[in-house]
Image (cartoon, rainbow, N blue to C red; front, top):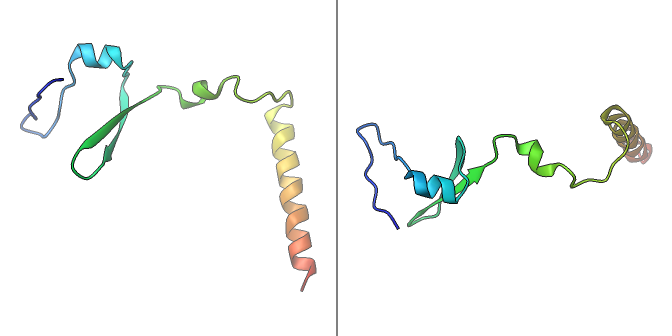
Length: 82
């Protein structure tokens, strides 16, 4: 645990040991939790976290075309009621 002071501009410097132990890079998410703050490290490349999470062999262009076609069909169904 560390007690830290804000500088004249209201900035806070996290000690190196804390940054390293939590693998904090350049960005963090700060959440006001009422009586305290939550600091959540953010990845430098958010998409990197998703690497391997999806087992999709189709290229993005094909996935987008499929999504657009599905949306178009859903819209046609919705409007056919009127």
